Image (cartoon, rainbow, N blue to C red; front, top):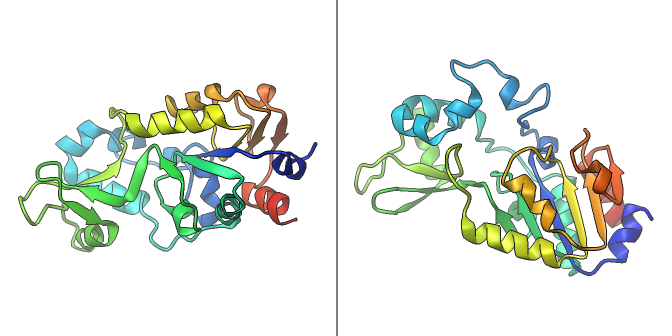
Length: 240
């Protein structure tokens, strides 16, 4: 069976995606030749995106964060729109994403579990006031540290940094959705970042599909493996 036939034969699909879903929206991934981890900085990207670095070097953290993690002009691509259409058809029950860009929602998807958080949301750790990305961006222009206007504390993006745990509630929802699915489509992820990568182990359904430009550790388990552009593959499968 091909992907289109598998989708037509399924009633409860979950999509689990990573950075490769948004590369076609001109947001770089992490581990490819042009990815974030291959760029040269004063410290490794993993260090600069850690909780301890955020606390000890907030100015350098935000300089890196604003320049490398924020893509205000990014728009949803064919993959995002195809998944939103699949949800409208009632077949796709949830999207579990490692991405923090909010493009799934921008394309119209409703049931999106952002297990690594979102750059669109920001919180004051002291008084818990919430701030939008637009409110945060004014600090980039002034090369300053975003501070809460109410209490003066340094604001933190609602993004899961290294050394931080994932939201247990979202993990539970993700596991629940994947365990109940009859089809799991994994796309645009190398499946090397845990605990997120471990979510695929909860799938007990009929069709496991992997769409990724490079091989993953789960290729041998899949019913269908496609090494191609995820936007093109999903668009063709859903729209014909």
